[in-house]
Length: 346
Image 1 (cartoon, rainbow, N blue to C red):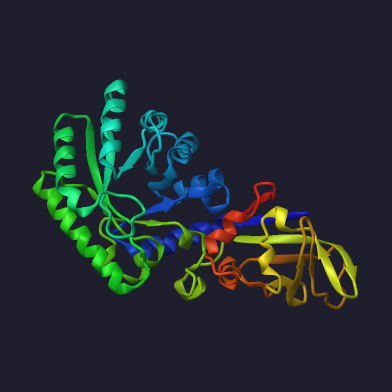
Image 2: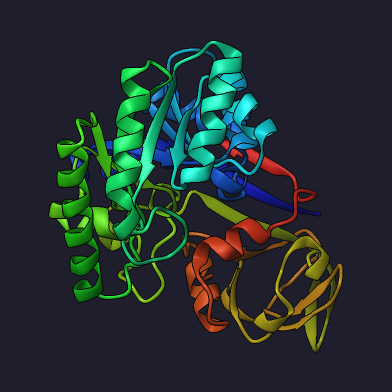
């Protein structure tokens, strides 16, 4: 058997730490990819009980799921709407929508009129990441059109936002300069948003000038540190998930555990450090449903091995594993198969 243990008390503590760090900016908890693989419903219920008022859903389907769990009240921001059906669903779920394309804005006009609704929108400027967003040269015309639609009561422009690369301070400073110009041009067009948001996890902690009115934080709230960055503990955070696997067989050359590639364990992680009752051990082979770990004195079938966690048994974090194969910690977290049971504690 294998299971992902999720510590909801640790989640609450992380949320408190993030909010105290970024204050007076507000926290938007990002819950994309099933709350980074931790389970959407328990995470959003815990966060709402802790006082989180904004949730970042990425797509409309996730946003509607959050609304179904939490009901009226919380603000839910979705920044990917791929079709008219998405727009209709977003309006029905009373979502805030990120709009970074002139064509999508016009599609939203049609959907809003059909629903006889005024839709809350956050206009996105492309500050250089090129993930999506309106190019700076097209921005003045875009915000003038948005201002007219706001005057007509079709949309309510509550936000202006963007993504940054967090690749270097210099690049992020350039992106912020573009964002500042965009805010000025929006103001000249008559748009004065109540929330401006630019920073995600890393920038929200180390670059106060990037916080504005709100920060979008995902990984840090789950205790997942940035690749190449300081430990989560050094930031006052702790991983909320621990992935355990039962020992199913013991031999002289290794201990077999009930986790493998079909559970989401990347086969490239052979040689990684995992946790055991006797401390750190090496993961020597990864199969489809079972893997092999270096043995330890007294190893028995009633034991468990920890694939990643907070380090209590010598294991690394999800980011420690990610760095071995050139990726980021959240990529390891979201790979854990939905077939792996989630056990909630705290």
